[in-house]
Structures are given as C-alpha cells and as structure tokens.
Length: 358
Ligand code: TXA
Ligand code: MG
Image 1 (tube, rainbow, N blue to C red):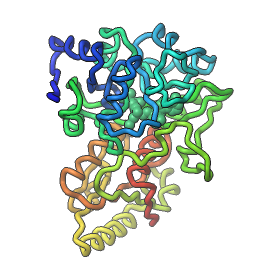
Image 2: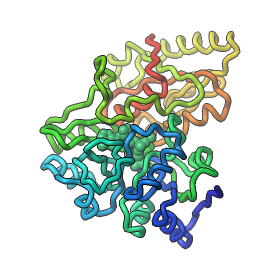
Image 3: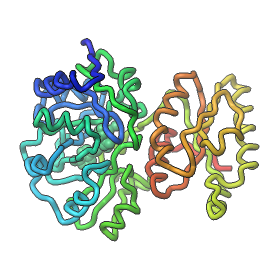
Image 4: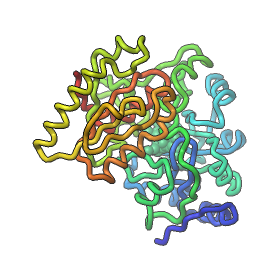
C-alpha cells in the first residue's frame, strides 16, 4: 500500500475521504499521534488492529468533536462525567461510559463500556468534523513500541501499512490521555496522563486509582483498562530506572534526584560495568543534570522546571537511543507528582519495572 503524506490544508479533503471510505489515517493530537478509522465501521476498525499488530482484546478510544456525538455513543452521562467534561474537554482526558449497541464490538473488545475523548488538536478535530464521524484511534505506533509524537516516527512504524499520514507539529503533551472510569460511584483513574490527579481532585474532591497504575494488582486481578496489562513503550534497549533513596529528602531542597555526587558515582560504575560487557550505554537525564554524566549517549528529556517538556520528549528520547544502537539505558526517576505520575508510569513500563536503587 502506498502511504500518502498530507502536508497542507489544501490536501486535507483526501484524508477525510479516506476515513469516510473505511481507510486508515494517522493524525496528530495534543497527546500522541493517533491511528484513525471510522469508529462505526467494523472492518475499518479491524484494520487498525492489523496495522499495529495489536491484540484484539484491547479496546480503542473513540474520538469526538462535539457533545451530540457523545450522546449517540453512550447510554448515560453521570454527574461525575458531566463535571469532568465541563472542565477538561476538549483535552487530554478519556472518559469511560456505558456503551450503546451502535458501538461495534471491535472497538469495545466486547466490554459493555466505551472510552470517549474530545481532543483539542485542531487537525484531529477537523478530521472528525469534516468526515462527520466518530473516530476510533489508538496511538499510531507498532504495538509495544513507544507512542509516536511526530510524523517521522509514525512513518517509521506505519509506512506501507496505512493509507495516509497527516503531518502536524510534535505533540505538546507527549504521553497519552488520562483515562477515568465514570460509570461507578467514584471516578477511577485507569491510566495517568496529561490531566493530573491534582487537577481531577480539584474538580471532584475524591478520586480512586486503579491498582494497575501503582503496580499493586493482586494475583488474578485484572486492570480495568485492558491495555494496562501489556508491556508497552519499550525501545529495543533495556531500560533501568535509577532510584536514589536520598531523593525524597532532597525534594525540599529543590533537587528532585537527591545527592547528585552519589548518583554520578553510581552511574559511572554502572557504565563501566556495561562497557566491560561491550554494551553501549545511554543515560536519560534532564537539562539540569546531563552535563554530570558520561556514557555513549546522554540525552535530556527536558527541564526539571517544567515537567511538560519532559513528557513531551520522553518517547522521542527513548526512540533516539534505539537510533543510536544503545543496548542499555539508565534513566533518572522523576518525582510522582503532577505530570510526574504519567511520566513515571510510561518509564516504568518501558523498563519492565526494572529498578536499581542506590
Ligand atoms: O491520548 C490518547 O488517548 C491517544 C490518542 C491517539 O488519543 N490514544 C491512545 O489509545 O492512547 P491507545 O489505544 O494506545 O490506548 C487506549 C487505552 C488502552 O489501555 C485500552 O485498554 C483503554 O484505553 N480502553 C479503551 N476502551 C476501554 C474501556 N471501555 N474500558 C477500559 N479501558 C479502555
Ligand atoms: Mg498505545
């Protein structure tokens, strides 16, 4: 299949036509690029799973561009959902509702609920509005890889497998939307993302957090978002998260990584050990710390003074280590506050929960 790339608005109608005709279009959103199809066309949705190599039991998020579309898809909008919609839509928040039967099984993976998001990105909104259709869209990566935050990474994974890619800017937030289940008595976060716990609590008071996020699932217990059980966001390199046990004392002194001399010393030892085994080593650091370290490739994800710069570049940095043939990545651990929760959730998954505590 020849994948066409749309670079300006004059060609945009082609993308709209492809969606209407049941094809696949990758489009930018404020979180990550999405792989879009008509959510009401079972065959088109099935092709999303094929292009990504995605397991069929992992349901998709349906994207809308006005609230009329929501009422066509869901049986009930609870008071919790209403509050969240008023405050955070359009934006990086996905809500779980009871689904109407119009939503195909391929989208819900057989659940009686459906995930819906109203994205803020103007090109994604235009695709939904111009086609007049709700759009099912997972992240536009090959299943298991870090999600793409720019058109080049979509091209690497999807060229020849989908009809079209819409070229937009790099995604502003860089990690996927927060998912909140609104079908129960209390709002439950199923995946942390751009809308933080603090922001949700400000609107709702109390929230619950699915144990899949805190990695405290008991045996036999399943995450409520089926996708949370898969290994994810993994570059080819083996990722390890360096936990500095002194960091928690140092947050008060505006140093999120604790005793930096200690950190540097341990990392030097780890890099030397890896070199003895002929491994190429990368370090994932910040603008403030990258000069401290020596390895085959030291990359900063962003500045500690603005965690959104770090979420925005996280997946791109992970993919860059692969571009450079890095075998082992040591990553600093960010404090789990604000966007730090979503950043660490993605990092922990990309590391397969491998930590080194120093
Ligand atoms: O930011 C985002 O949400 C991006 C952009 C493209 O909008 N999309 C995205 O989709 O991250 P995906 O497919 O990579 O992740 C969807 C997640 C999966 O973990 C899936 O299990 C969960 O949403 N999900 C979908 N429907 C669900 C449902 N009815 N109940 C619980 N979880 C659901
Ligand atoms: Mg994904």
